[in-house]
Image (tube, rainbow, N blue to C red; front, top):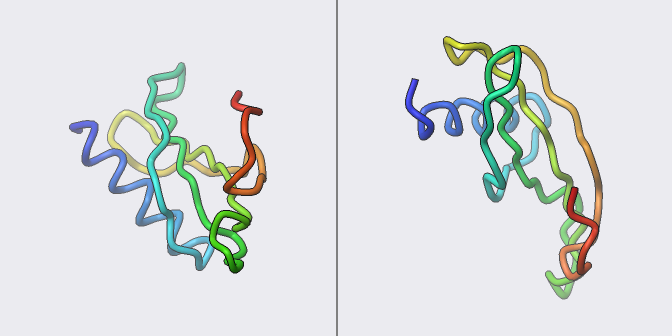
Length: 85
């Protein structure tokens, strides 16, 4: 699968599983089991939006692009600086 297709599959599946709309694909990398797609999701909308609570999710896919699982790796405020893994 092309990287765009892997990212699209991860985003669509994460939206269905969490009930939240993913906002940004943060990264895509190959690992021992296939692929990992890191996706940012708005978990709590606030006013102003700079204080929204975001979650960073890692979605695992196999070589054919089938989703194996997902997990939230961190949670943070949109305006928070640093803390990248």
